[in-house]
Length: 160
Ligand code: 5CA
Image 1 (cartoon, rainbow, N blue to C red):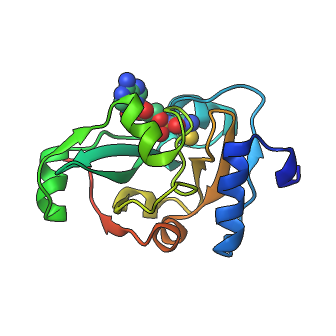
Image 2: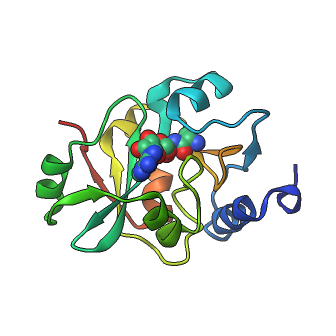
C-alpha cells in the first residue's frame, strides 16, 4: 500500500521513516494489535522482536523507551543507567501530548518533538524487529541499529 492510503498518524510515521532513509515500509494489519503479544501473533514473529514504544516521565519531561516485548522495564535500574531521575509511566493523556499518538499505536518516530530515547539492548538479538506505526493497525519492520539512528537514542539494557 502507498503511504497516502494510510491513516493520518501512520502517514506521519511513514514520512518520518522515508525522510530518514529507513528501508522498511508501513504495513497495515487486518486486526488491531494493541500489545506486543497481539502484534507478534499477527506478524508470526517472536514477541521479543516487537519493539514497544513506552512513554515515561522523567523530571517532568517525556522520554521514550523502545522495549523488547519479551520483558518489562525495570524503571529504577534504567533511570540509574541512563543517569536520570525517577521514571514514571505516562498517563494516556500525557502519551498523546508527547507523541500525538494513542496508547496501543505509539511509534518510535513521527512525534511533534523528538523525545530522549533509549533502545533496549535485547532488540539487538533479533535481525528484524517490528514497531507500531502510529495506530494499533499499523507496524513497520526495522532493526535496533536503525531505531538508534531514527531516534538519536542510547542503547541500554532496560530489564532487571
Ligand atoms: N501496537 C502494539 C505493538 S507494536 C503496541 O503499541 N504495544 S505497546 O506495548 O507499545 O503499547 C501498549 C503499551 O501501552 C502497554 O505495554 C503499556 O505499557 C502501555 N499502556 C497501556 N495502558 C496504559 C495506561 N493506561 N497508561 C499508560 N500506559 C499504558
